[in-house]
Image (tube, rainbow, N blue to C red):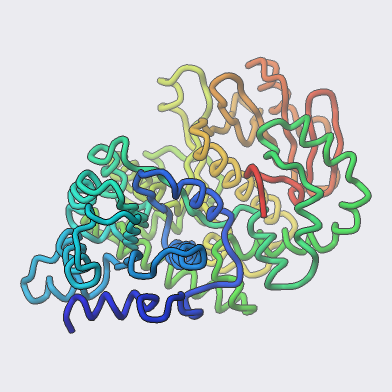
Length: 478
């Protein structure tokens, strides 16, 4: 099959004028709002995140919207970095590149140079990180064709993708697509499980994130207690499901927890490790990397020193640090440094390491029915991921804090001030449980603190208690 035949098969809307329903989903991730806000700009739009978070589905949903708003189907081309357009030619000794595929599209479909066209041309490249020197070809086409809009996707686990920032400096905008935080999980939960009206819930919540201004967020909730009380049982059911199953969208296609956990370990962990990290970084002993992930899962949220981790699985400190970095880039784990204004002390202190998604953590340790104590650990991990998503979006720092016998679970460094967050996922909280939070606020002059709870909504001085079911990381939902 020729390249133009392969392109025609992939780009079925050239013939039909619409995206085949098999590639679409009923629900749309919140990130699509950010994507369309960035579509008018000329910059390359990079949809970045770990595998199986729905990046490919987002691409089809974007194409669908473009077609519905009048874009000529012939002016939209999609190809995949792992498609026969590239892999087939490699097997036969060919040298197909992004540039040569675009040339085929221009010559065989458009029949005139892009630069001569008045309309915008949309070039979508899924899984672009598989393509050698992709950034060179994208930069060349971008610089020579002002009416081209590139929308690309890639894995955040690949250093090549991250390294492209230099060659595409000033030409690329990233949108992270990660496993769901709770507020987005809840919207999908309501759509697929039909247990409550998400729109009603969304209208009651504040428009801003809990982490933006805890006081404003709390006071808004306090005025909506009656409306929120009607949703409490359904929301708690959603929290319980989220803590067990995690934030990968494909969960909603099955009701079988054992099948779901098997799929997570096989499809996301095994392929994420072996196809992405191991193959790209040429890891010589992949079993060590896998053992490291399983060790972290068994102790998720615990404090580690790289030397201790390395000693446990038989590698040196440098290798342990390197492997931890690989897993973090893949968004399989989250590493929190111990906060200090002295950066030298930060580097030397122990780290807290979490498996980034509770579904993956539970699958690794075969946990299909968390008890109340384990739910507390899972709630802490979920809040860390909420804070990570919030901080990465705003370029804030994210830490924990321990000083002798006291600790604060999360420290958000907003550059102008610090926001400590404590997670106490239970119905009774003693004063001594918050010693770490108050000590941190006093030591570093933090004006406001947050306690994320199971059911408690209240205010004590400048500390705001908010149930996890009402905590919202992102600004704007729905």
